[in-house]
Image 1 (tube, rainbow, N blue to C red):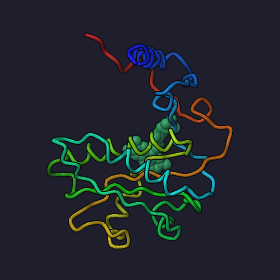
Image 2 (image 1 turned 30 degrees about the horizontal axis):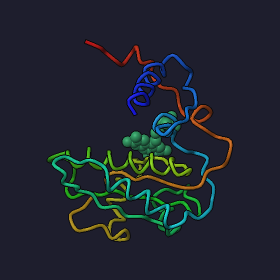
Image 3 (image 1 turned 90 degrees about the vertical axis):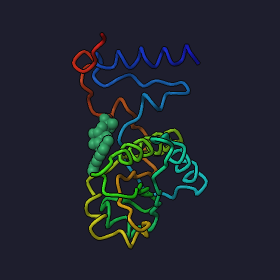
Length: 188
Ligand SMILES: Cc1cc2nc3c(=O)[nH]c(=O)nc-3n(C[C@H](O)[C@H](O)[C@H](O)COP(=O)(O)O)c2cc1C
């Protein structure tokens, strides 16, 4: 395990030197290799997989373990298209909401962001594509809260689109460039 973590750190440090980064295997491969999918295709996701993906969100850490979130899994295509128009049949949108408007405390925003990252990575670990979205969130909170059945007082914070993806794309060919580590990391 230690050896593995060491490799992750070394690889992360080296990332900036590469155009994107090399595709890596191993148990933590998905943490290094993730990318925001834009090659979704139609196709149903088995319920058991969706459950596992949502469980990863539930397992996320939160401040004082408050777990402020709710996970609303949208599989209805007509409703999903109102939120993300490009949604394809079989894709799922996992909307993470929390009580409050995010302006008074803010911890719930960070908690929901961590849950979103866990969902995003779990989906990719199971071989699906995933993409985090905040662009549609204002629209959701303006007019779709009751369609989604969000609990009273909740606002959507972030959503993750999960779906099957076309073959032949990986982080090397699809992920965007990252800033060089030398520009953004300081050791003291
Ligand atoms: C907080 C957050 C909000 C995002 N919102 C959107 C969005 O509204 N629409 C979209 O197409 N992608 C959205 N993305 C995806 C980012 O554009 C993507 O993760 C980033 O460009 C890196 O892509 P890569 O990992 O494939 O290199 C969002 C990502 C994050 C982390």
